[in-house]
Amino acid sequence: MKIQGSIALVTGANRGLGLAFTQALLEAGAAKVYAAARDPSKVALPGATPLKLDLTDPAEVAAAARTASDVTLLVNNAAIARTVAFLAPDAETALRESLETNIFGTLAMTRAFAPVLKANGGGAIVNMLSIASWLSRPALAVYAASKSAQWALTNGTRYELREQGTLVVGVHAGFIDTDMSRQFQGPKSRPEDVVRQALAAVEQGLEEVLADERTREVKRGLSAERASYL
Ligand SMILES: NC(=O)c1ccc[n+]([C@@H]2O[C@H](COP(=O)([O-])OP(=O)(O)OC[C@H]3O[C@@H](n4cnc5c(N)ncnc54)[C@H](OP(=O)(O)O)[C@@H]3O)[C@@H](O)[C@H]2O)c1
Image 1 (cartoon, rainbow, N blue to C red):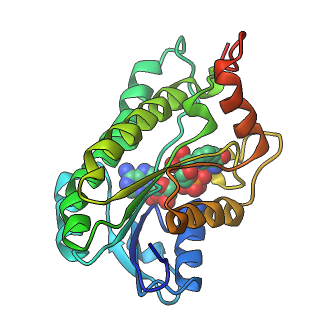
Image 2 (image 1 turned 90 degrees about the horizontal axis):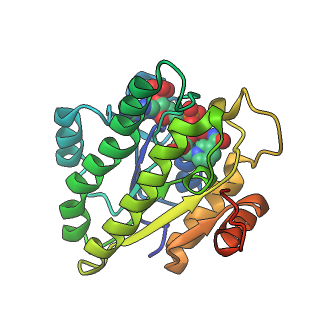
């Protein structure tokens, strides 16, 4: 599929990677980009079409699918990252919140937009995953659990949507320079670089993006004798 002329919806479009997706899509000639945000007044990008959407609100998800019934490319970008270890006192609450947004929110969007994409010829879904789909550390344990689950969701929906011609692209990345990684040190990708690779994958029909060398190394290490996640 071509980005030029596509009609896209980006979740969490008001800042971070979502803003970079929205900007890149407009620059690449998308005919319309719905910039979905919990507070659409924070969407300040000229040319974008603001849309109110909290992923955890079923009524707002259903309304978004009715309003944006012309979508051909869904970017499931919005997520939260609770920096909570499994043995921390608030682990259960943090995990439930993380699953509510990252898993149930992404699932709700996928289910609501599957018929829309089918009606519009198949199209594509981009799911923002993470190196944390495969790797856990105490500071990101709860987040990693939600991203592993989101990886499984991506792999499952890819099969279920293949018949209707919808491409499902999973994008794994290490740290990206946004608010989410602000408190962490270490090399960070530029949001524009991750977005460029994700949109190239959509155009080339590729199902997985490994956005940086560290992510590629961890993926390779999954089958090592001492696996990379140990
Ligand atoms: N940054 C990294 O290091 C990194 C690395 C790998 C993967 N990722 C993934 O990349 C994606 C984007 O992350 P980011 O770095 O751009 O994060 P970010 O700067 O924290 O932005 C997160 C976005 O998600 C939105 N959001 C959160 N909960 C929502 C909800 N319930 N409904 C609708 N929108 C919601 C936020 O909206 P508000 O402004 O209203 O809070 C914000 O727009 C995420 O899936 C993340 O897991 C990030």
